[in-house]
Length: 165
Image (cartoon, rainbow, N blue to C red; front, side, top):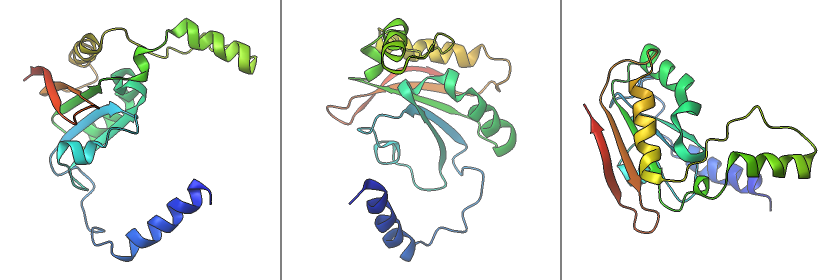
């Protein structure tokens, strides 16, 4: 059975007892969370979130550059007034450079990806601090509290890196 078939079966079971169709569009806790797409990180479970609580924006590394469009919409149209960043230990973004992935794409696909910033990083804590600074310095975002954490995939715990209120 393909994963898509498994997903369809799981959704049928979920939808059969679904009772949250009346949740409001804006997130009730007025928070946007930017985190990594890593399959080992379940933001809702790790951070105590329920449907309707928060906007959760995921991408490779949880980088805010990729999340900017979503954050602007979240604030301007849907009323979020806080941002939480969650990067994590053992992240794949620590394992390569832009040039390494560009070379792989040239070799395997025969394509040029030099125009793409893949945003890898060499220092986990610094990546959180850099992303907080990037958000604070961005004139398209509101001046809201921003908190950055590192999630430990080994333990499930979050560790505060910086709280910018």
